[in-house]
Image 1 (cartoon, rainbow, N blue to C red):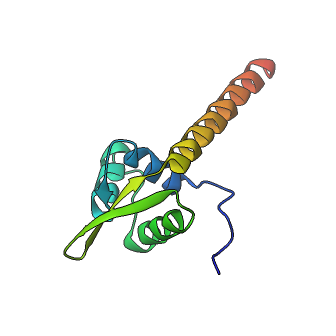
Image 2: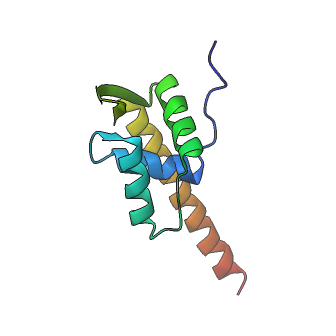
Length: 106
């Protein structure tokens, strides 16, 4: 029995999805990419990262493509790409709403 379906995409999840848009990676590579992209603002610790990867694999958002020793390599699925685009659109709408609210508040 799986856990509850992912309904809310956290910041860490969003950046993980974003990183996978560029190819196949291991967890360590994703953590490094996210930290570099956010200039250290978002750091994915092992517990957070491997929880995300496990949930994403369970939900078929990511799939394991191969192993290299103990390192597991993943790629994003079509479902994961759609999840990224949906969340990107939601965040863009939030920013647009905030800008409208700020303008109306002047």
